[in-house]
Image (cartoon, rainbow, N blue to C red):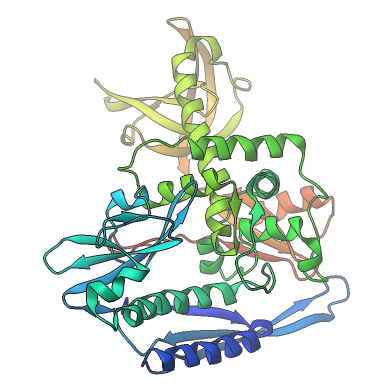
Length: 460
């Protein structure tokens, strides 16, 4: 198992359930001849949610930061290590890795074949084993005893136990779930993604990882969409942004499923393989909620790329003059080409740029050159409108590069997202959006500060 210590943030409402599940895991560990798993509390936060109008505390709870100690390491037998369980479905395989093992891509599409007995029959799960010599083997559960000896099933159970222990910590971080039951609960994917698309349209996309990084538990798009889909499970303080998604959002969700299901190739990242499998299943369960929701965000990024390429191909037809001469404008542009111009007054750099709508901007910069292919936020004055080779151009002057930061604003448990240079601009935009002269008491403005991630870190 990965030696990196992982911290889970468990709301106090879930702590009792967590303790009960650890007791069950302790009994399971005893049967497997393993030490009982433990968790250590390293920090406790007191969270208070107030009514912004009365300043009265409506709810107080604790957020427990815990680390989990499984009491054992990776499962290795006779040079073989259990590295994953393959969950076989009609639409494809879902890979459940143990730790950070690298899984060969061919196991994404293998059948239920056991490479020990060479029989292919119905099996819900098979195990992937890796050997010290670099080889791999897929083995069915009933053949493990013959492959390793009479203790093999216990080793397989130990490997699954490690994976389940990590999944338990993740599931307890959610403030709401699908409810109890004897097995996984499935929901139709197309309905859920309609809600996801509507949330993205109104409030933008936020992954679970980003919400956790900003200490905004419960604000990930997948969770907000789930609360809208099941408002009775969302709690008494939940304030929906909409009653039902628009027909257009349901169409986006269905198109995203079709796109993901048609992703081609096997030499693709694990992420694309997994969302393709979920899309082909057309259902999702609790542990797949974050992956399922991200299908819409990935599809929209794909559309954005296609749209930009289309704009470039039709530039002469679509490029327009922007604003009026003398206007001060701010826009995101991509630097397409930089030409160095030398004269008796020195060296300047001609920047040819375009925005997301295919409009063309020209800027002579004397201070230096921007890198070709880079995207920048530029503030400048429209000097003149021009036409060159049949393409309308906007010539800029007095330009400066500015940085637009992302701000998340919480107003009475409702989240807004803004792009602005400074917090002062955010406050102005928020007042205009709410139609008020003064912001409500208790308004929280959080600046998104991107973290520097090393190349060795694996993002999930």
